[in-house]
Length: 381
Ligand code: SF4
Image 1 (cartoon, rainbow, N blue to C red):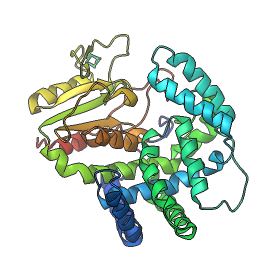
Image 2 (cartoon, rainbow, N blue to C red):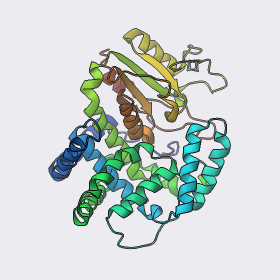
Image 3 (tube, rainbow, N blue to C red):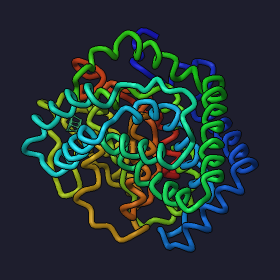
């Protein structure tokens, strides 16, 4: 276990990750269908009636309810301590950071420093109410961090929905989501926990070095959020599967940490669609996957960061299917972002994290499960 930073899909020696996540996701969906069905049906009616968006499947909305419960449990105590001025400044800083590449370094410095001061304190209050006022505080805190843009987008509709309900009904729904999250945490620790056993050690022993850093919230995510992303990615993969198969064009997006060479030595060239491998070494998995793409008719792009993954694309909805290869903590947000842009996403997890930006001093070369990627792309060999 010494080499594992937070998670590893290879940690469960006896257990194949993709088999384990499939079985546990079946259990989660069954639980959501049997216990959250009435809430989700009512929510979907609200979405349709108010033309909030093109309606999504019930399982996607059920997942959002679970996400609400998990984020409420993990972050509400922090959200309750965020005052108006820090909230305004952090939210403004986050908005400025998104627009400004030029000043990103200095903005990141302030984001890390001020985030440590303002976003990580916890309220000690007991018996916090399950009400829309606290829901609003949670959304505002999530937005202020700059780390939960997609989560805020998805939960905003739930906030509007609950705002139209009586206080008792909205309290019951939030309480239900929180209890669902408690159940999920317990069951996920048992069923898929061996892939994330290092997370708590990391948070206790190593996380301290992220103090005042820009990624202090991203790297401090709790173990249950790893499990939420794992199950969430599996649910979204299933929800988008048929549409993905029908797309005319397929692209595979790879993170830089999959390259064999360092940034300085990699010979990839920039293009409209991200960076393209030039095949400088046969030892590189990106090279390998690029050759597989040439043979089987999909494009391969190297993506420096999820936030820049789709920015240059002008996509006709549902024409392009993408397979995002990403570390666990980026899965759900990446799927939702791609869907919002009209892409049809599938994802394959990096077997472990190790990029230089967040997790390792010199950077580990990461890996993926080729069988899983080929299954997704329907490559038979
Ligand atoms: S093989 Fe491609 S991706 Fe890998 S280091 Fe060389 S140019 Fe970069």
